[in-house]
Length: 97
Image (cartoon, rainbow, N blue to C red; front, top):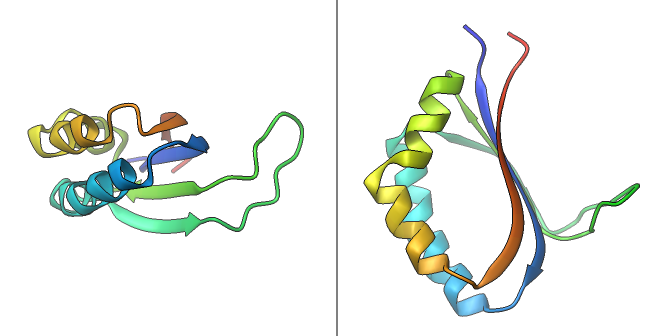
């Protein structure tokens, strides 16, 4: 079964306090959903149309698990805390195997 990944690239962080509130809630929600943080970096080299801003990579045992974790009540609470505090490109992708 192919793994699932959350890829989140932040374009701007307009409210660091909202981001901090989100981080406090999102970490436990991701872990409860079976996610493992592989990379969290503010040190980014961007190419093409990319923006050199914070990037997060989280691995799940399956694509379905990654989707379910995003839909969970705990993660939705984290998203509510984040609200308009950032602009980001968030994707859930399926691994190759």
